[in-house]
Length: 296
Image 1 (cartoon, rainbow, N blue to C red):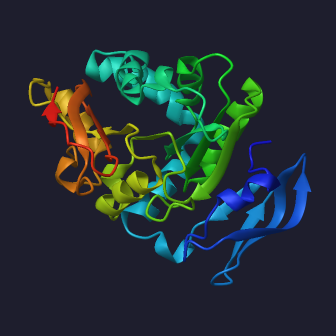
Image 2 (tube, one colour):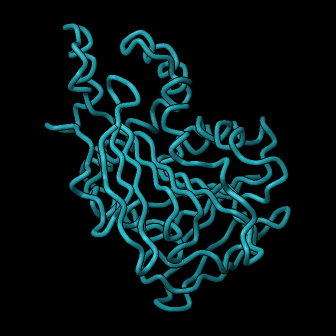
């Protein structure tokens, strides 16, 4: 099971008004299974089907968001093998090395038990097939009480991710359908936030970045990864054509540093592969002195 526990429903918020949600329906093994999550504020109900909460508005999924969802829904089984094969072929760097380069920016090994007694919580926005879940688990301190939450708009990718979670017997993962532009969580809920490979195709990337910053605890690392051609890289004709093919959704695929929320600090922009940047930043505690930003 990969759904949210019934006892965790009060942690969620209504995507429409940020109101409190109440579950009405059937549970299984203590988790929501079928029914709905009704908002006590605006009264809107959000479906839960076969353990998957659908906390997003379908009419808000439009433009590039809708296009990319159609694509990802059609290739969940092929996504991971293609990534593993094409990354070294086209970029001369292995997939695992690329992932290791951005995972270190999350600083997961430095996480310690929270003073308030709550579990440490890690959020991956656009969790996809769950390829980062084993890496997250690997980096965490042994015995640390951790919950990993993953959201995505592609039901096909989430189905693949749920199979991965069941095979690996991850008991600390919660998955749901949600829109990065309106995350169904309260302010400061997460101790780390990660997003890989989608923000360049979002209809409003600045809003999605603001949402990721909102749900992260102040001072904690946020890491965003997507396509950008390394200016120091000299691509062949084939590599240039391949890059344009995978970034067909954008006229100018680049690191959205200029769209970071106001006040973002510790901003680091670096290339983790010839086709991919990594942008890490933090939102400061009130009264904190802002460190300098830099490119790596």
